[in-house]
Image (cartoon, rainbow, N blue to C red; front, side, top):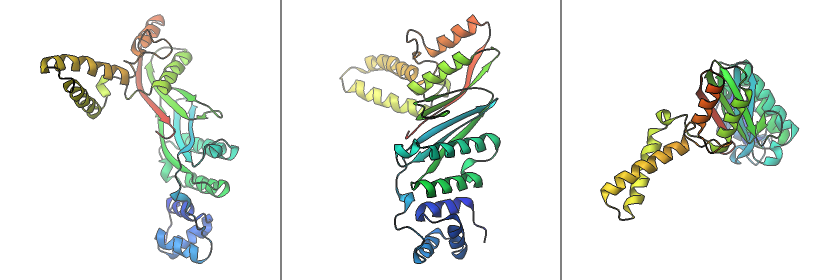
Length: 275
């Protein structure tokens, strides 16, 4: 029977056995991973400890921009020590290169990616997981916080702008740095999750009622507190981290007017290890 790369990866994480042994065991068990693991144990190939049962909460966020194409990935390891070694950095770089070159394929089903991770698990001896990945195409800017190597760190940001401006490298990086620092939930109030807003509204109402204030006062205070919540959680409404006297929206308007051009944020992606 045909055995998928994803099945092989899962069995390798469980058993610590080699790729060919895992393929053979899966074939013998007709794709049943539990039975395949038993076969490996019986042959003395599988290690007693299952790597996949160990939490992988450390690791790195990787960011790569190639012209109008960009990708961001999170690769997890069990320890911060492993995430800082060259073997792990090579793995992150290799997967970034694959993501950039194969734009239409999901990384978690890419056989080459699975084989790279399987190989790294065998060499490094820790559970390693591709947690998530995304791509952007357009006018892209990026930033990596707490960088341990080029394009790798604990927080990564990709930003897509719609603009007719030229030479916005500094501006784009500033916005990315702000996103890394303050982690906005959305661009503006329009795209802020309504469930998040409604949940916060209920919390505010209950807090105000607990103070014993009458309903008409509660209603007035609710509007102000809810508006503050929205401002603090949207990119355009947040105080600009480099100059808190203005909002990010005002900063964008200033740069737009200064350069006599239009600038708007189309999308941003922010990855942080463990979040």
